[in-house]
Image (tube, rainbow, N blue to C red):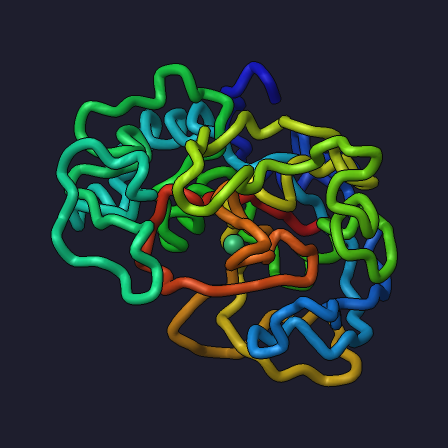
Length: 294
Ligand SMILES: [Cu+2]
C-alpha cells in the first residue's frame, strides 16, 4: 500500500464470493490462546488469564489506515472528524508548538490538549501531514474510525480478531515475532527509545516499517494504538466463540501500544497488552486498521 490511496471498496465488492477485498490479508480462523500472563504484565488490565478463543475466518488490513487513505475518505464524503468538531485533541507535549491548553492529564503530564490539533494538523496549528502520507492517520476517534470502515465496506476488528491476527500464527509469545524484544539486536517496532519522556521522539513512522508478522501484518506492536470494535471489560470465560466484548460500556478497547510506550512506565507493546479510551476521544498516538468478514 505504498501508493497510499486506494479506491472506494463498495459493499458489492466486499460481498463478492471468493475474492479477497483489495489488499487485505486472510486470517484462517480457528482456536487460539488469547491473553497473557507475562511476569511484568498488567493483570489489572485483564491481560489474563490465558483462555481459549475461537474465531471465524476473517480479512484484515495488513497496515493501519494511512493519512492518504483517510484523505480519500474525507474528500469523497466530506466527513468531519470529532477532533475537528470539538476543536482540540491530545498531542504529546514534546511535539506541541501552538494552541496548548492549560489543563493537564493527571498522572500523564506528557499529554497536552491542543486547540486545532486534527488528523491534518497532528501537532496543532501550522503542522502538516504533507510528508506523512504513508503514516497512520491519528487524532481519529472510535466514531471516526467506524465511519471510515463503513465507507470502505469494512468494519473494525473485534479484540479477539485483532489479537489472533497480531499473533501471526505464533502461540503464547510475548511479541508478534517471538519472545525477544530485539532479536539479534534488531529493532522490530516503533516504541520509545531512550529516557521517557525527555529523549527526542520522532513520533509515527510509515505503516510498513519493520518486518511484518507471520500473517503479513505490519506494526501491530508500537507505532500507534489501534481501535477495536469491543467495549472494555476484564472478565473472561475459559472458552469463548467469536467473542465481541461486553454488550455496553464507556470505553473502547485499543491494542498494540505506540511510539510512546517504554518499559519504564508502559510496556503495552506486548501482544497481550490492552487499554481503552472513550469512543469520542482522539490522540496523536491512536489509529486503526479495518477487518471484514470472509
Ligand atoms: Cu504504552
